[in-house]
Amino acid sequence: MPSKLLIAAAEAAHAARHADAFGVIVDSLRIDGVAVMQRVRDERDRFVGFVTEAVDHWPAEHRLRGRARFLDGHTLQVGEHTRVEARRIVIATGSHPNVPAEWREAAGDRLILNDDVFAWQSLPQSVAVLGTGVIALELAQALHRLGVRVCVYGRSERVGPLTDPALQAEARMVFAEELPMRLGASDLYLQRVGNEVAVRVGDEEPAAQRYEWILAASGRRPNLQALDLPQSGLPLDTRGVPLFDPGTGQIADSRVFIAGDATHEREILHEAADEGRIAGDNAGRFPDVRLRPRRAPLSVVFSDPQIMLAGQSHAQLLRSGVDFAVGEVSFEDQGRSRVMLKNRGALHLYAERRSGRLLGAEMLGPAAEHLGHLLAWSVQRGDSVQEMLDSPFYHPVIEEALRTALRGLQRALRMGPPPVEHCLDCGPGA
Image (cartoon, rainbow, N blue to C red; front, side, top):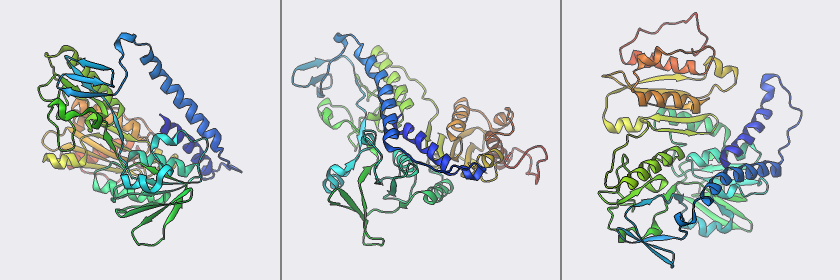
């Protein structure tokens, strides 16, 4: 939630800055960094308070505080004070940012993580964002729109989580139009210069740029190292993460279960909540372990334009070998999107050729958080493209773009009518 609070402030500033495109003139724009960060901290503390209050109200006999590590498959040492022999164990230790040691050594206390941003008393002058993933993209754009000098550095050419090559290329273009970016910066060098950090990419021009802060946002790792998992005898993969069944949360055939970011798989809050429920239920009824089907995957990036993946991604479908067709729509000429000046990006839908069933979608564009829900629900229900087209579509709404993509997908499946040049009943992009 803290990042979304910062994004909300950035959206307000961006709307005011570009209001003249609608004929609305804003004579002056002043961003009060102290007030921005005060609201972020106040609301963050409010949200966190709900969680801590709930935990604090648990009966004392059901709480044991301290760092735990495995002594064997059913025994834990908690701190230096307590040994616990457990009939069932659930690992739900979360994750932490993955920061290369050389970055920490070079930048020192000028290097921060995403959570540190929300402790700022005011907005800084400049920030270098290292990474191009979800957190990096959201925070970089928000800070940029709030007047902070920002540059995004990425080791690869990828921007965000999109796997469809065409959408990934469009994302690079769209975000580079607004944000200064250095992609393909695998040879990144940091050097502390007083209270700033110089960032240089190889020996290329331009020369090193200096920033007040370095924001490390280059992925996360599970919080597993301190658990001493080798002592548990549990099977581990090459990364040291336990091998588990996503449908049960159980690690091999043991009495140990795992959930949340500690699995290093779907590192999203609603997925972690589902995993916690699955692992907790099965730990509670062990050895009567039951399989629980997972929901259709859904992920959203709250950038502008937003990014969404629902169901199986383009890359997953290619790896699976399934024969699928693609339906596309651009938002450039989509009616409602143009009205709001949000006409950037595209939506791609993927359906199985044999059955016509929707398998997944990827999107860069407006209202992706809402379209993503509709598409994830359709994937989970097993809707066919025809069944989706038979559903109601209002006019004029962004969802009409979904209908256009579905019509194209129906034709690609060779299940629908040929395209027509004009639609007399609907506007552009309908």
